[in-house]
Image 1 (tube, rainbow, N blue to C red):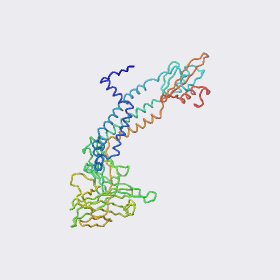
Image 2: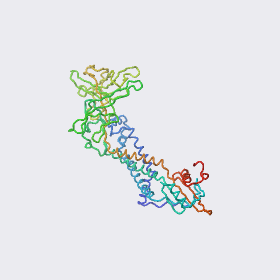
Image 3: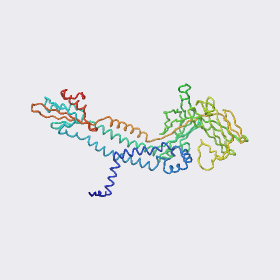
Image 4: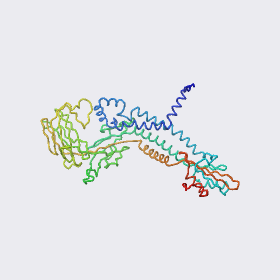
Length: 506
């Protein structure tokens, strides 16, 4: 037996074959799964768009894998070429899949149901009986019984079909999925978001240099930022002291003085969790808070080198907080790593820690270092870490508000603390599109899963004795089964004897 190879495809034939493969539903599902897979690194690894300092620290701590992953775009996933390729292929696949199906469905909505089969008895669950009425009377009664169905009437038979909303829901779901992709693309291209920590009494202006972390879309620049500003005038937080909810916040709000533009009059606003500040197309969310201990650092002669509060980051629910203080103007340079405890406790197991988030018994535990802070090397450093390589430790000390620690190189005084609030400021022009299309997708999915496509046929034939033979059959198109409830309902509506209707269908 000789097997001959198929003739080679022409360029046009290959392109048509490729297009059919790309726009098939199977390919769309594969690409949708692939998009979910390639998004995983963006959830696991830090991203340059939101936290560039953490990315640099990750690469530094992983000198082998860090540069490799960086070159492959794993720290900027949503701007990587391979992510964009999967995204665009999914978009094209859905468009090419949905548009032809929408045309076919529109044509189907405008056509009559197919004619009744010649032999209804081959369908499971067919009901037949002899009726004393004429053929026209039975068919007229069938039309009344199947009102609301799409009906095709012809000599001696009636075809009825319903359930077109199932395919409509399927198309709505896929069209809405395209809308979701468009909404996400709009947000990714033209949206932006940033995070900033603001201490009580301090302000924020919506410029790039004011953000602690900022990530903008590929078509977004600093010119897209609205010129608003606000000052954190008061931050209020209260914690439950009841045993069941001990330490959980019962009040968590920031009072700000908001200006829409430099020339606008300040307006008092209150920002709470789930109640952001609407700021000229952007939203200001309150996402966190903490303590900012205040220190005064002097050199050996008593000259003040540093006098400010430093935001510390909470490490647990009781606000045991860590922070770093750097004094580059000292000679030699000074650095401090510190542990702030709102309600101080010390034991042999955990060491110094806080037992309650409110400042009932505040203290700070300091570790002082002298030497080169490494700030002159041109490499950016996190304000929350102190590189002690090449530095010499001076000592350890614990202070309460008002106490001073003196050492040969100078002194440090812990005067008290302020509070800080963390805000996330975001502008997403695609969120409305994404929300609306996501709702439409849910509606389409509900229709697809809940509506059944089924057909009912009624045939009549004149018997020799003058009566009419009536046959009722049906089928559910999706599972190939018979539409038993509709068959029984139609037969009963036409006056079929009870003995011809199976008991399970009653």
